[in-house]
Length: 562
Image 1: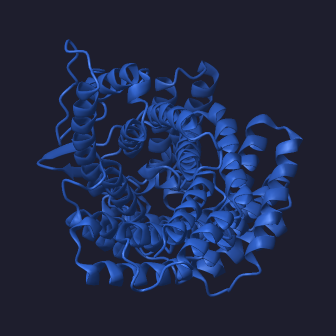
Image 2 (image 1 turned 180 degrees about the vertical axis):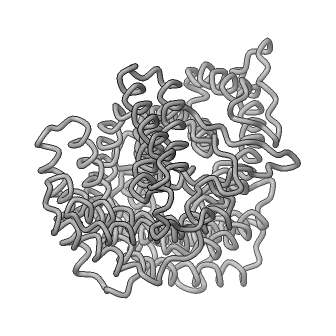
């Protein structure tokens, strides 16, 4: 092939890569295709051919044209395997990694993990360190999606150990690592609540002020530290480290639409959302970062209606929470608007699509809560019933807790309409479902009332971490105190005074940890005194037709609750 043709290919490849880095995926794809049009099966520049294939796969993946990406990927993988050239090993690793990413986007997390494992297996000393670390982080994400939190943590800590060694080697080579500074030793049994991890974060932050060390690999270290903290519900710390990583990426990638910056927006929005449940002041930040993520997706023309519908649902939910918290009407209006956009996006899709069903469920729950707040009880009830019908028979494992969540909401809206028998039936069903799932999976009953964005909702009381047993650290949380109160009211309605009283007492203990005002504690104590008086009333205890088995009612059945 003439040198002029080779130069044309290289120019198209350079233009494609440049546009890809700026988030202009459609334009990038057109350049990669133009470059591809100049090569044939006998083209000898192996490296250049692989780069073109990778460019087309990545651009198609980012545009959510997954079938096109798979087609390119299978052709490239077949060609690379047949070529049996040592220099292609790096491309083979990246192809397996991309195959894993495609499965992740499709929600096939077990398949994704297999492909990512193949990528790791094909890695060698010449494989890009950045690529290796990204594969490990993606592997941890598959474990989190499958609620295998222990495996996620092990993967992240193991990756962090390798990243730190790479960081130290690079900083020593560039004379950027002070000989007097020793990085804290990180072991596989590391606990994020030890001083070790925070000390490590401070050291790396100090060193990363050096421009030579302000690299993507350094940003990944902060992402990994943030994710370990996130796995242990230290959402404030997770936010801190995700922000440091985001700052580094902002300096490295000038285009706000670069995919690395989208990843940071996803990390920060999720962490702020979880953080906001214990500190409502963080809700606005969560809203801001979800909007940033949506803006990048819209500007880069990613055609993913499910993802956009999901973002509109989350923005609607956050706006609703901000309306409850601030009582500002603009958040109410914003919530209705976002949920309307979500419905408009989702109703066009195949009703049998599982992801579409989940987001329609989220839409119905969210709008139901909006109408509930507006005291439009009947419309709220209809939306909750629709949510139940959408997911009925479709939830598996711990996700069945969502059935109980819907039934609790139905019970609350029935009470507002004086439908006491219907409310009682829903509460009983919800308790039975929730208690059964807690007993099967060693879950904490109270934490199952948390928002699904908080990992505690689905994590067991005790987790075996390598060879150690440890108790999940549960920070004082205003939402947890409110949940205790909510459960206490529910049990009082069901005339189970013992559980009602114990939950009110737990609420008091939680409020005391938060240094809550004495008036609130006094108000709850008065309720306990009232219940204790009712317990002593034999006529109430003889009302056996409303009692149910203690094993169905007790949230503490066989478990210790902090």
